Every structure is written in structure tokens, then in C-alpha cells.
Amino acid sequence: MTIPVIAEHRDFFIVNKPADINVHQQELSDGLITRLKQQLQSNELWLVHRLDQITSGCLVIARNKETTSQLGRQFQQRKVTKFYLALCDKRPKKRQGLIKGDMKKIRSGKWALSRSFENPAITQFYDMGLGNGLRLQLLKPYTGQTHQLRVALNSLGSTILGDDFYGGTSADRTYLHAWQIAFELNGERHQFSCLPQSGEHFLAPEFINKTEEIQPVMTEFRWPEITFNDPEKAP
Image (tube, rainbow, N blue to C red; front, side, top):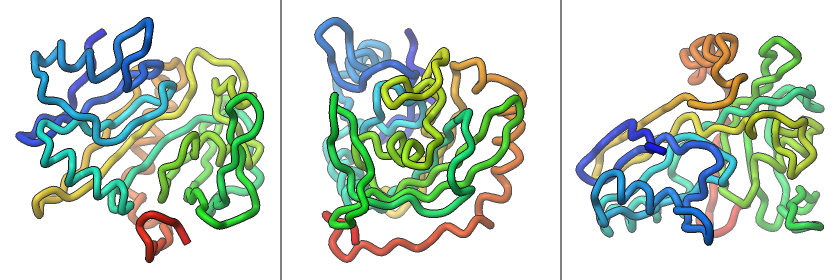
């Protein structure tokens, strides 16, 4: 499988990670970094952040250790802006707003959202009808905790389509995609976006048309300003 490279910079690559590939090496299959090193014929590649195995979309790959360090700090300090798209087949309890709470581990490796706020996962979301019984969720995570977006939507009764692990309706893939990412590096602002390349519902004209429709008005959405006094811990 060829990993799509959507941007090449002297300090990094942006790739469109396929769904169902782990970013790390697994016992029975190569991880994304190993595949990229073979594909690009380079051993100088470093993972800056990660996406769940089931998640596709924008992933930053550094080309040197200095860039890895700089971007790693930005992710740690929550200065990287990310937008995700998800499809659901159930209407959420509310149409938009913040989903906030501590993540706690429950049975079988699953996570759940609690009502405490010691170190909460924070996500802003907008729910839109897509047609054919499907809902499109535009998600902006302010933190980056394990399974955060999957658990956030599950807490609203709107589990992601295809996310069998959390009880979602079975589908040909889990419908979660890292759509856009933006960050600064050496005083220069970078922003990238990519559409999914798999999934019958992601490839449908209704989905593609909706992403084109919401792109121009994204700046008008009321994204709240979340301030973190301690970059290691959310308020």
C-alpha cells in the first residue's frame, strides 16, 4: 500500500494516513513509519503525533530531530489546531457545544467520560444532517487523550459509524477522519487538509459536497477560547 503524501517541506511531510494502519510497528505487520521509510527511501523520519489505527487523515512526519522536538512541544502545549470529521447514524443529545470531562478506563480496554474535571478531555463539536439517515460531526479537539473523540460522541448517544469497539453500527470502516491540521514552525504558519480515501459513505457525493459547503463558514463558528495555564494539565 502506498501512503499518500499530500505535502513535502524541507522539515516535514504531511501524509494522508489510511484507515486500519497502526502508526507503530506491530508483530505481524509493518507500521506506517516503517512503510514510509521504505516508500520514500529515507531513514530520517520521525513520528510527531499519532492517530488511532482506525482513524485516517492528516499526519505530520518530521524529517529531522529538531523539527520533531519543536512540533512535539507545540502538541504538548496544545498550540496545534486540528479538525476531524465523523459520521454517525444516531442524532446526538445536543446539536453543538463542548464535550468535557475526565477520561476513565473501564472494562475491556474501553474509556468513558466522567463528570469530574481534574484533567478533562475537551472537544467542540457541530452536528449536521447529511441525508440517508447519517449525521456529519465537525470536531475540534482541544486536548489529545486516548480515544477522546470516539468517547466524546459515544457520551452523546451518537457513536461513530463503524466503531464496533464502542458499540457503533457495523460498517465498512470506522468513519473518523483527521481533516485539517495547522501549526507554526520557525515563524511560518502551515495549514493542510485532506479528504478520506476509503469508506463508501466518505466517498459519496453527499459527504464531499457537505465538506465543500462548511469550509467557507468554519471561521464563523463560535470556537471558544480555551486557556491552559499549565500546558501539562487542562483546567
